[in-house]
Amino acid sequence: MFPLGSVLLPGSLLPLHIFEDRYRRMIDDVLGEDRCFGVTFITRGSEVGGGEERSMVGVLAVIVEASRFDDGRWAIGAVADRRFRVLEWLVDDPYPRARIEWWPENPDNAPPPENLDRLLDLITEVSAMGAMLGYSVPMIQRDLPADSVALSYALTSVSPLGPSDRFDLLCADGPRQRLDLLEQRLLDQQVLFGAQISMDDGTDPGL
Image 1 (cartoon, rainbow, N blue to C red):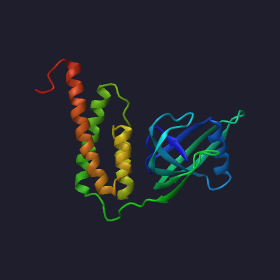
Image 2: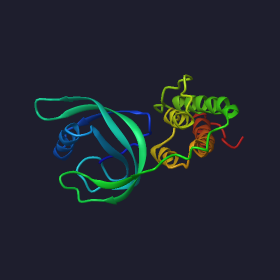
Image 3: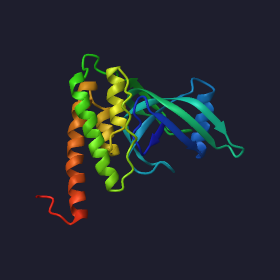
Image 4: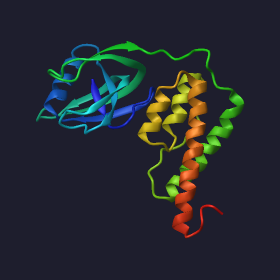
C-alpha cells in the first residue's frame, strides 16, 4: 500500500518518485509479482516518514513503466484501475500493507446524457474562475469515454476541486450519484471563487 496526500481516481495516470527505503522494497516486491499496489488517501499527516492517518478506501495502481537509479531510487508510471475498501490495516513491516475487498460500481446508476453538456460547461466556467485567481487547474478535454463509470471519473479528474471533494466523489455509489455530487460541489466552488474574485476586485460579493 502506498498512502498519498492526493486522491487517485480510476483511469488516471500516476507518476511517482520512490526514494524511501520501505517503498523501494515495496516496488522491488511488486515488480517481481503482479506489478500492482494499492493507493489510499492520507487524511492527516505527511507522505514521508510514516505515522499518517489513512482512508479506508483506495484504488489499485498497475505499474506500466519503471526505471531504477543507481542509488536505488525508482521512477515509476502507473495506471489507476479499480477501487477497493480496506478491511484491515496490517503492521507496517516492511512497508504499509492491508487486507482489502474490491468495491464495484453500481452498474444501474448511469448518468443521463442530456446533463453532460451542462456539466462540462460548469467545469469550464469554474476552472476559468480558478485560473483567474491563480490556482492550478486541470486541462479540460471534450474527448470523453463512452462508458458511464469511466466518464464519471474522467469528469471528476478535470474538475477544479480539492482532495476532500475528490475523495467523496471516489466513494460515490455509482456514476449518476458521482456526477450529481460533482455538480453540487462545482456549484459550491463557483460561489466560493465568485466571492474571492469580488474581494480581489474590491466589490461587494453580496451585490
